[in-house]
Image (cartoon, rainbow, N blue to C red; front, side, top):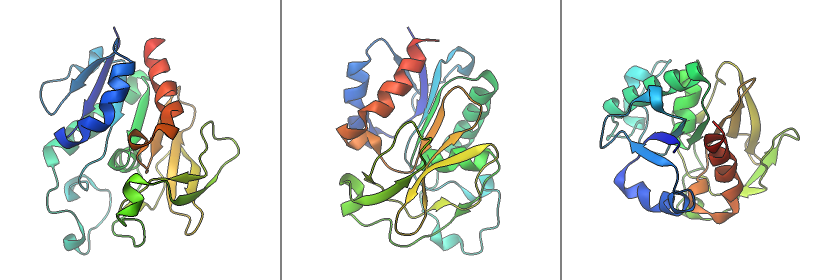
Amino acid sequence: MPNLATWMRRKDEKWFRPFWAEHSTVRIWNALRRKVPMEKMDGLLLTGGSDIAPEFLRQNVPDPSVLDKDVDPKRDRWEFDALEAAISRGIPIFAICKGLQVFNVALGGTLKLDIKGHNFPEQRDHNVQPLRNDRAATHRFTKVNSSHHQAIDRLGDGCEVEAWCATDDIIEQIRLRNYPFALAVQYHPERGRIYNELFEDFFSRLDNR
């Protein structure tokens, strides 16, 4: 039975339950609730959440007021440590929304700490944001449901951009080069069935370990 590590807020669990049900052989370890033995994990899922706490960013924060007031340093510490452990072992990684930002920062990148035009309510659950895709990307979508106020600035080491917003070039999808499977997306694939192929690809990597 494959083991999947994550840190997931209770309010986000409802979105992922359909995928857990379809892959009932995967054992989910939620670090919010219990200790996760990363040496026994077969994959890592980084999900959405509040902004990364300032002490984990690789940049100055000129105006701390732009950051969420409910940052969670305990979660950040776990996710950065878990990501380091996952990469060292070469296990599959799938990072979503805040997860993409953690992924990018962990690999030496930086963030735009407050952007405009990407956090309207209609963008949270509706596929309205147009994308441009790199031809080499395995998974390509013309529009996505992306709602966020931070975004990638300097790209992390070894990362390649696979998709970006068609209107302002904000990065929406990256992968880690020369790695079995490490995909990070700024949008929310758990909230739309058109993204099932992303989860199927990820879970297939767990099953084959």
